[in-house]
Length: 138
Image (cartoon, rainbow, N blue to C red; front, side, top):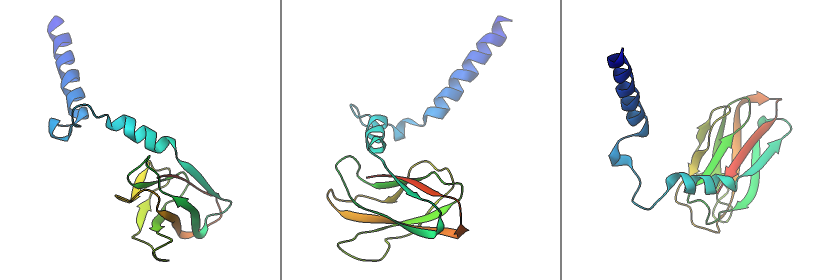
């Protein structure tokens, strides 16, 4: 009986180590990636459209020191494409990123300087009558 408990403990410990990831992906000493992500997402702004329709623009916003990237979380019941328009530079999207329904935060623009004005454009995959709800962390 004691040997089966020992094996179970060893297997559980091994699975826990696998879930944590390899040491090559570990953060640098003294840094806390979870804390920085929590701080970034903690300042998220909500956008809401009564109906998703074919999409729409949220913003304008201005990037902050809180996040290095622009991140969007889709809280809608359907998937959408999102892109960032850097208002002072262009009226066109950077590139489209698919956000599945109920997604976690997904990066839609990387390494954006602080103080840059932008808006997020949403494009639905079909005409939607349900609300379009998203959170933006920047």
